[in-house]
Image (tube, rainbow, N blue to C red):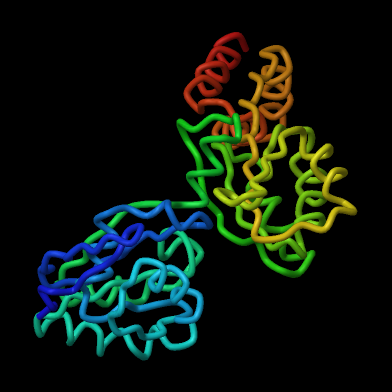
Length: 295
């Protein structure tokens, strides 16, 4: 059971955290500014029997700042699969356990997925404690559409694999969001400019910190801006989705249909033209029937 007398401090004032129901609490923490934490997150971290940290040294800065003295255990990509079963047993026995990453919302390009899956498979409760997220913070200030977006985390380190991953997203219509290391930011922007073309984009750096910075422009402009500039901290890249494809000229695809029907069965000709021009099959099939009726 959790300690009902667990507490925390805000600006020197002491507060008592209420007890928690048994379960795993996925707690979002600040991405830079320590004040960007919710009261519910503080209560959860203070009352939990243990706090699972991506790096206990990194998390100590936040926990110590708010006077949270509970037990801390490292849970990272190298041990999370091994520890998942043990954590599930503790929750099943009645403990309330908190999970945090170094910054932001756990599981978003951070450890935690194997544990959450193990909890779900065991039928144990998992509670989200929402808060800061670099992904959403960058998205809302980028100046790009937010009605549909896709998060792709970190692209591959190697240039060839990175180019292949970007190419696979070339036709995606939704706004695209990526995380990137400051060491690879220039190379990634250059690759995006080459593959995506002249799309609008934004690069967010040091979000919520003193030197917060958001640069906007075309991918080519951003690639040039960051080509020789050394940056600090992880970047968030937000890229506009692909433009809607223009409708093919009717005369073009109908001429192609006539040509295709001249040397292959109607069904095969219809399939070929449908795929080549991105049309609805019924539309092409109806046109093929009309052509056959004229013979």
